[in-house]
Structures are given as structure tokens and as C-alpha cells.
Length: 206
Image (tube, rainbow, N blue to C red; front, side):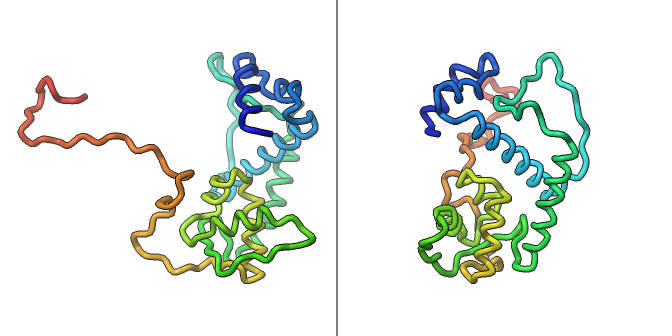
């Protein structure tokens, strides 16, 4: 799906809560493909929450001013299935700790991945390209627009193959976002304070 196709469908469908049907109607994605994407995104969101410590939650009903998500899994996902899939992913993730892949690690590439004639390696190459010893798996997943589970699985596989290390040498002043514009927050203008300006002055900013 192209960015233009998404923007057109979003503009047409968002006001009425019909982004998904607009995408399907414009042949940007099939109905089965859209359902699969929404399902995997939901599973990955719960996995990410669990990896960062969320264990329980409370279901809150929508209020009169609340909005539904633009893309929904229809007709919904049973809680039992969500629990089962999250538990399965956490069990797999526990095995990654043996090679140092955790939610807090900062993997660094030690050599390039060889081109594979069998399996598509575009994801592997892109993940390895972002593994610079300063980004966490979450940073890499965000920068690539990929799910956290998929990225961590790829990192664990490459760690076992010796393509990257999860214990890079770090400098105290290293900032994982310095060289990646996709992770930067907007910089707001800063105003220099003047010691001579009295409180209550008409120039004082509130």
C-alpha cells in the first residue's frame, strides 16, 4: 500500500469511521489482508506492552466523546486468544535472553549479512543497518515501521549467527537518536531568560 493510497482513503473515510472499507474499495488492500494486518498489529501491541511491564488492565467503556480506532479487527478478538498469543510470544522472547536480546538491549552489527538465494533478506538487511549499538529493538522497529516481535526475532537470529553483538561498547554521552531523523522529537524554540526583566512585566511570557 502506498502512502498516497493511504492518505486518500484516510481523508475520505476517517470522518465517518470508514478508513478500512475505503482502503478495500480503492483496491489498496484486500479485505483478508487488511484483517491480517490489523490482527498482527494488535498482537504486537500487546506483546510490546507486556515486554515493558504491563501485566493487567481494566476495560473501560467508550464515552460519548471517545473515538474508535480508524482500523478495527472485525468482529473482534476473544480475550482468550489475546492471552494465548501474548503468552506464546513471551515464551519465545524468554529464549532470546540467552543471546542477549531483550527489550532494553542495544544491538550493534559486527558484519554484513550475506545475500541469501533462498529466503528474502530485505528485513534482515534493514534491521542490521539500524543496529548501531545505540538503538533499542523498539527504536529499530519504530524506524522501520515493523512490529517489535518480528524485529526482536530477527535480532536474535542474527545474534546467534554472529552478525551482531548485544553488548556494544557505549560512551556515557551516547544518544540513540542523534543520527536518526525518524526518532527525533520536534525541537521547540527556546527563549533566553533575562535577569533584568521584573516579574509582572508586560513582556513576560505566560
